[in-house]
Image (cartoon, rainbow, N blue to C red):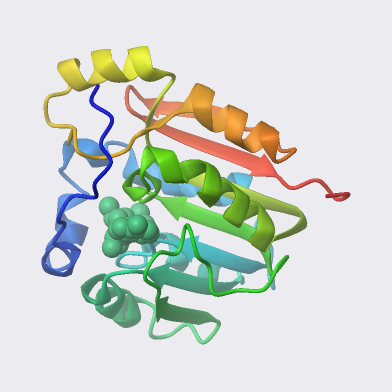
Amino acid sequence: MTENSEKPEWSFDTWAETYDQEIATGNSFDRYADILAAVVEVANIRPGSQVLDIGVGTGNLALLCAELGARVVGLDPYKGMLAKAEIKLAGHSDVRLAWCEDPFLSLPSDDASFDAIVSTFAFHHVLHEEKPAAVQELKRALKPGGVVSIGDLMFENAQAETAGLKEHDWLDETEFFSRIDELSDMFAENGMELICQQFTPVAWVVHATRSKES
Ligand SMILES: C[S@@+](CC[C@H](N)C(=O)[O-])C[C@H]1O[C@@H](n2cnc3c(N)ncnc32)[C@H](O)[C@@H]1O
């Protein structure tokens, strides 16, 4: 696997138009609904929970959180995606959507703001070398006892990634799929244990709790 260091040119604004149809058929989105449901479940969302959804896209995960009574902030760097989410979430007064240039790395929020930070199919847009900083930023924004819960395309380790990219030629090699062994180390460095559940050969839900003391 080549270590990519440049972000690809993505046209999420255009993709927003067809995104919700593609999740029903695209290879990357196998078990999409199960993955979103699992992310929400492990995040332990309750009525009134303060929840941040990073890479909110067309709003499907934010909608699940809002339906549980959470107060949701959804951030995304692409206005086309946010426009679709605005329509989907229009009836939910406890949801706030906002543009943010680089939400995994620079959150516009105070320390310890959220009971849960959730994200689906977006963390692979963070460069490998920036993932440690992203994990630190996630911890910073979580309340003690809060949970970060991420569903995404991932591999157990670099070796599994190399094999997976060969086997699943529809995967985009220019993206930055987490390797779970490395991600576990990043969370451990922040005093958090990463718990991982595999949903498809290439998709996982991982979560970690910020300790009450840190
Ligand atoms: C495949 S979509 C997933 C959308 C939604 N979370 C879902 O599960 O349906 C990826 C989303 O990540 C956003 N995105 C792209 N680059 C990002 C980045 N560096 N940080 C956060 N989100 C990013 C895109 O605009 C898009 O909305």
